[in-house]
Length: 242
Ligand code: UDP
Image (cartoon, rainbow, N blue to C red):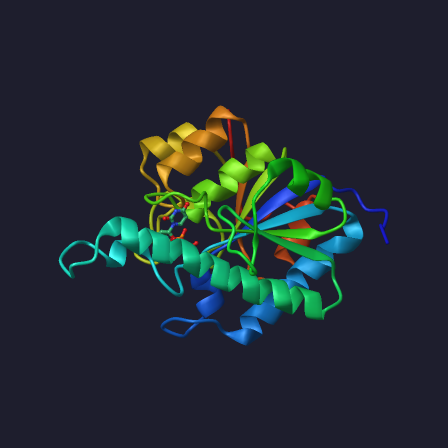
């Protein structure tokens, strides 16, 4: 059911990090947070917005843990990291399905009997009636799922990327350590890149900048934040071209 409400986008990519899913645990998944994220997603479905979720894997494994010193090479670490995103994706998939919501999972590389391979054209067809979960990052080592979010956003002709974080948005400096840190409601990519503000890796930003893909950085811990932004409330930070 679509409700009449002014919406600012028709199709979005929601990037959820593994770190968010682990909550206060040192690793793994906090089921309460999984349920919470599904509630937040469910709340926007009546708006008729099409949504693909790019899921991270940092709660289970990150490639940088393998730095050669432990006899494990970075590429191997990244492969394990990409598999971690599939594990998170499968859990998210099942939890969404349990709520009787249409959902479809793809991975940048297929695993026979577990998940199908990513196909942009198929995803564009399916996204009309399903939440699409995109796993496996971009399928190559040395990248991140933030880059995957921007890349898939461009491929799937999304209107914007929503990066769910535990912070309110982008500040000029770390607001915990600097009381004079300035909060930005709006900022441009080149400024973020020039000032080396750490929100996403540069590859992700440059892709978004070159293809004019707005990125919203917002605090997913504030209930209803996704809904509010999508219905026009100024909340969090929007990064776009000047
Ligand atoms: N990764 C990768 N290629 C990709 C995406 C991810 O090699 O395209 C690996 C990388 O090792 C990364 C890990 O998967 O550390 C988990 O992804 P990410 O760090 O983006 O997860 P998040 O921080 O969002 O939980």
